[in-house]
Image (cartoon, rainbow, N blue to C red; front, side, top):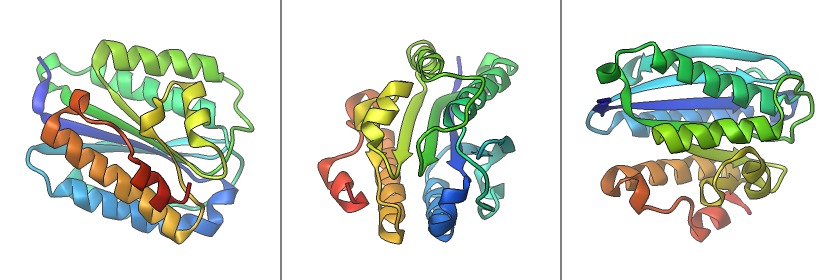
Length: 211
């Protein structure tokens, strides 16, 4: 069986050009989120990838105490579907290569973007949706979607993210901070009560994030 004391937090962050106005806020918010995750019992490893119209794995299954401050340089366009498809596939392949007892008992996939899909070539929203639903149903992965300049619930649902785990945030310092705080609170509730026993984002979370 997978290691119930081991958690994987896998984050996919948008670095497209439109992120320029909130790049500093995203760096600070992500670092604060990682700091909060460090404070929990058990062992946590972190995987990070970034995307614009190109996709890059930054680090894979790094112990959380070794995670560096976020480096994010906005550029390019937004190949959202390609990035999500590649990211989830790569995580799955990485975990499948491990002995079962070394696999994490908890996998949380966090996707954050500030713009609509506009340049994917390999993956469609339907293909991404089928992949996410497969990982949820077969392996119990948890998927969280944060989106600005869009209706994140609608956009997320097209890709297979559950409505209560999709959050629209304002593309501002306050909105970014509130979005990451909402994820921290959700992670805390999940640890306390179990993923099946808690809802995702509350109406209060949505108001504070700006939508």
